[in-house]
Length: 65
Image (tube, rainbow, N blue to C red; front, side, top):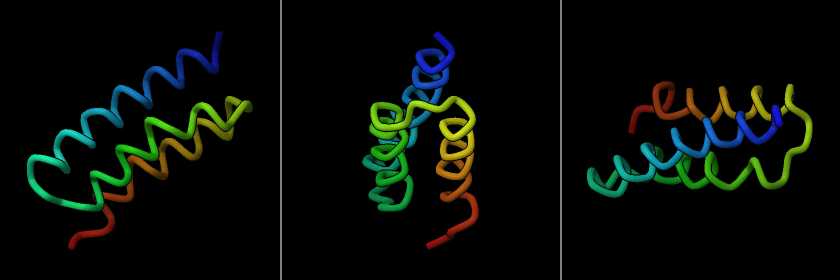
């Protein structure tokens, strides 16, 4: 159940990043959004899921193009 909730949270945030990146034609948020929506299907550990999600959420703020 924990993986489901974390996966839902990060996929929802990823959807927002994806929409923002598509409307602004910004590739970094677009790609991070796709990654945030896809990676919960491949990661089973809750701690790793949170760690990867936090890193992917921070990338658009750290990388300014």
